[in-house]
Image (cartoon, rainbow, N blue to C red; front, top):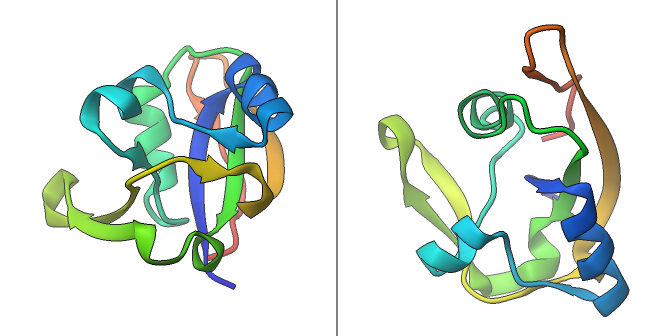
Length: 114
């Protein structure tokens, strides 16, 4: 199993998990795909896009369960990031982890499985 990661607001995930499908954040919908990060990328994603965001969750998603809808495209610094064109079934999520903020408001992400 290959894991990719998605940072989401707690309320957003509560709604999506109840529906059984996640259509993405407003940014995802505006961009036309759901943004994910690898284990090596997610800390920088959190720092850059989620500083000061309370009630944050980290979803560990089975990329293989998403199939060919996941594409790897260049983004920040030329790194390839996983993008999902279409909704994400909640069943692809393997773990949901609360993300705390440090004293400066930066999300704290521990060790992750690749």
